[in-house]
Length: 333
Image (cartoon, rainbow, N blue to C red):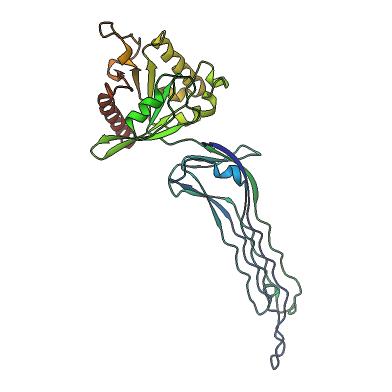
């Protein structure tokens, strides 16, 4: 099951209390105060882990509390600090405060972390309060409570290519032919109910990560179909691959609908490099000209068949070239 949103509560450990104690030993007159400090509470740390690709863990467990610090003791024995707890989240997770909506972190790199709730500081023992005029202090500090926050976690998949198309355009079949992914394939709309990732080998020891986004329909940006639920995952892709059913009533209109829904969700999506594929060309009469796509550059339009494999090697080469161009632009702005 793919889960891309979760709500959790995190709480840092409270600090230990300082101790009120006096040194009382035979032959040691006027031993003085020797109360130790309380230990600091542990913190809750969120860490991005590349081996996790869903927030499903947080459906079963929603509260995370770090251990508190131990209290101080006599003989200036300081309490042990509570250890931090590390909570693993997928790479690409955005962390927000639920109350204010403030974004705390965007964990896009493996190993990147954020202290979500700091532990409280331990209190000082009475040994800290001794002075020349106040030699027998009987006061000590209490430990401070740890921070507590309600957080919203939102996962946006990190992929090189976002595979976009209307229901039944053949996205799952194409992903299964280009990679080792095995999404569910059937001849009815909305077969894909959650995003799927596949690694596409491109030769020269290079590969690209492709994300199959569940089918969009007109009005997806307003919540129709499944689009609004998964459109967020397209935002992090480096390029888009529009897959059109060549046997549909009007592939050019289908492409217009897809671009319109993306632009209404986020206008920045249309600035990404893109490839347009006319799929199911195996079902197209060989003597009939291919449908025209006004406004699309010829260099980024291909006719392929995900079922028979026609045109897929050319598609891989095109993906390789355009991904390389995107990388060069990012490296040399």
